Length: 262
Image (tube, rainbow, N blue to C red; front, side, top):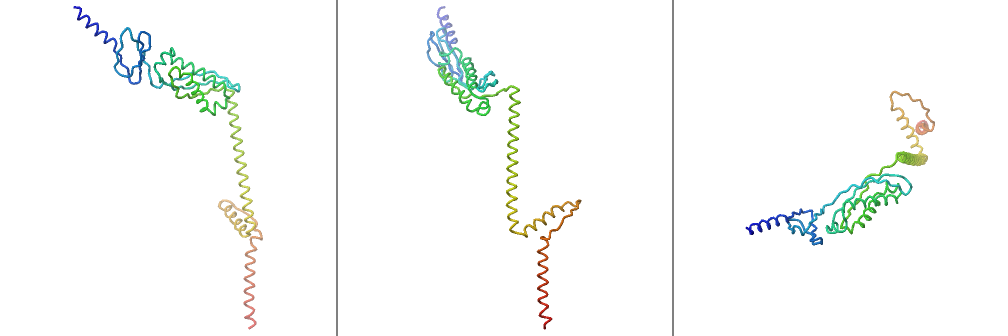
């Protein structure tokens, strides 16, 4: 009678002590309140009533940091939120050194976000986020290291500005664009004037080139068949033809003179 009861009790004890740990978990075991060891993935057994196991996930955790009211270094009130990426490297530390490592990491990230963003100016927060993210990661990782938590990255997700500040920045951006447009226009006019000066120097050395350019301009003006163009013909344009005709007449006269003499 006693033997079957003992067998049943032992079987119940064995079943009660069975624990299954998945691949991404580790089991932190305490025996009579003292740390006993860390069990890896698989089918494990602990002594019921004597051992206590706490399962800790080793997967990377993505935690959203709620929006924080921050006053920047140049006294601008903004709201900033971020995303935190971290994981547990030492399961025993995450259980022994802190009561709740998830809550502790979240609170630490919020206070660090307010502190770091409050030390930076608004332009740095908007333009140099990589530096802010790197600084946040270094500070939070240093403070969570005793808990066995490794912070891989912190990314500032959104910065909400007051409406009046958004209007001021929009005006500033518009003024900057207008300034760049005027600079580009001035540079274009300067380059065009420089090219015209170069062209005028070339045409000054080649009179026939100036005449050809004049004729080309007339051809472009007369391209529209619906228009009538009245233009004066400069004498300089006709002088080469006149000189050529005079040369031809003189040559003909010189040829006729010997014939008449004979």
